[in-house]
Amino acid sequence: MGGSFTSGRFRFEVEGSDWETDLARGFHEYLEDDAFDLRLTSTGSVPDLDGSPIASWLLARLARLSDDELGLAEREDTDGGGYVVEFVVYRVSIDWAEEAASSGQRFLFNMAEFQRPVELEIPIASFQFQADMEGAAVIGRRAADCLADEVLEAFAPAILAAPADLRPRELVVRDPEWKLDPEMYTPRPFKGSRNSYGWDGFQFLGRDNIREAE
Image (cartoon, rainbow, N blue to C red):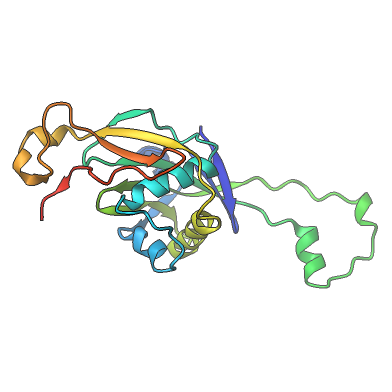
């Protein structure tokens, strides 16, 4: 289990979930956005990254939201040369008293003397958040009664809520596939090559990272 944050009706918990667990939870529908970075940049809220990948800002932003409990080490070996954070999404019960008060509903009993039974949070989706030199994507599964856009439209605003509220976090990544065909990448990887992501408190990292050649 890792850090978590709440947005809208959902709590996003840094937590692994495999195929069997997803099936047991009833996650049979796809939850995907292979251009999640565009969902963010289209708002105009992403800060100037000065040539660094959006994955660096996302790492620093998620580190702030999760209190740096992302399940990532300082060094990772990852296909694609980026990083992956795993989330399980829980539906959060809305405070019924606040909801009723906001709607103007009146009660015929003393609220202070009445307690409604606690409603447990319900897991309704799981996904991998993948970020690299190409952008960012969400890939996972959800329950049938959970709309994909509802989850994505809660996840994105949580990240965009305070774009400049970051936590210094640096991650070094090596792609095992670089050595198979170095000519496919630019700059050309060599033994000991690494990609860097994050924010050191002053600047975003990764301007010279290795990426697939066009």
